[in-house]
Amino acid sequence: MLSPDRRIELEAALIVLERDQTVERDDRRWLFEELNKTAVRYEHRDRHEDALLWAADAIAWCWQHGGAWKQRVAPLISEQIDARGHPPDPR
Image 1 (cartoon, rainbow, N blue to C red):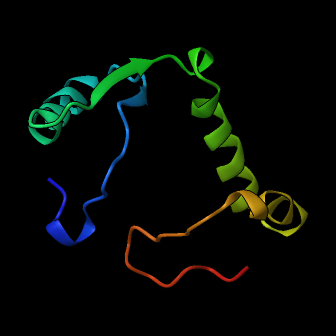
Image 2: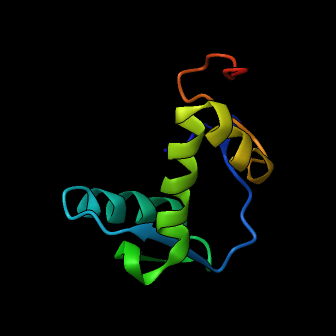
Image 3: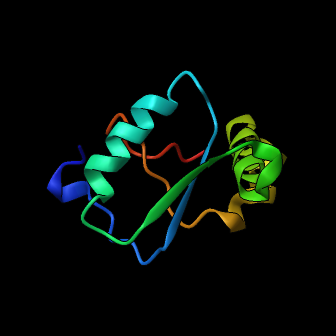
């Protein structure tokens, strides 16, 4: 469950998650708990079924490799959040 201070207000009708059978059951349990009081639906899809599933991986790869790769994708990044609570890496 998300802490109240980190909840994200959604104006979405559908959340698409990459299909990964090793975590799909847990995804469904968590999503049911979080979304059961809303009209938001969710689907698990294979990465070839939705370009945003593989595009995010490509952007993350460029960002992680830094240098010219990071510069190319920087305009696509609206916010950087470090899940460990560390300040963003300025590289």
